[in-house]
Length: 273
Image (tube, rainbow, N blue to C red; front, top):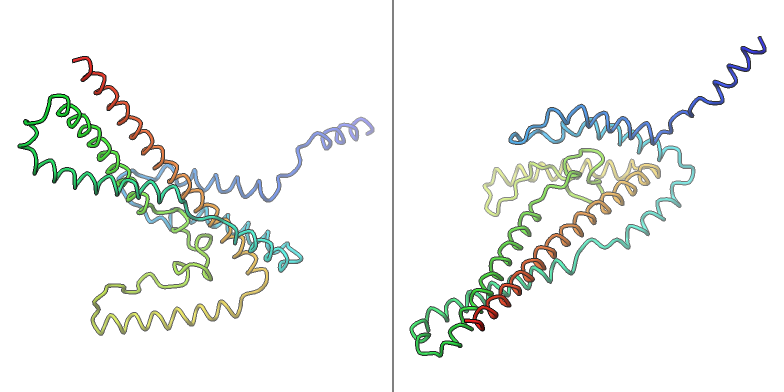
């Protein structure tokens, strides 16, 4: 009996601790992801709300459990709200790079017009000046191509669909984004028929009723959950914005560097000829 008791004690001492709620939730999210990953096809757009449903259910339940366990939600809500107010959600570098590319294209269009107008006068210039003009034209043409590439990627990024847009309950929060409070069926064409305006009025009134009901019925713990969800959503959005900006900057930098090396190589070639 003594030996048996010692063995049971040793087994109990060496048995691993039970996983935490966070570990269980992460494991269930991974399981839900693996269950859907094999069914995704490259050339067929799925219903993302349905595709993300399993992942969303696990994350939502964990968020509810965590916020329900808080004893003083008001203080935590104020702390998160204060932190969220200091988030930077824009990139000045992105604006500068796109602005420079627009100027390069504008000057390139003007230079093209001038070169066409004075093309017959180039033969009257000296050989050295002709070489300099040709080299400048080649380098500037590369800068124009780089600018077009940067603007192309900029437009692609502007149309990027963030994954949290497809979540129905853990994405956009209803107090802060119209995605979660306004019906997607609202007609927004600039010219509308009377029937469309009546339909839009009906949706507006129905959305207002739902919004008012949620605002009045909101508890302190629900407010905390919304603040956490919104705070993290903005953090995720910040990551996309900064990485997109870094990508544009790298494309522009590599393109300008290549154009400079091209110009130097052409100058060296012209000098040796």
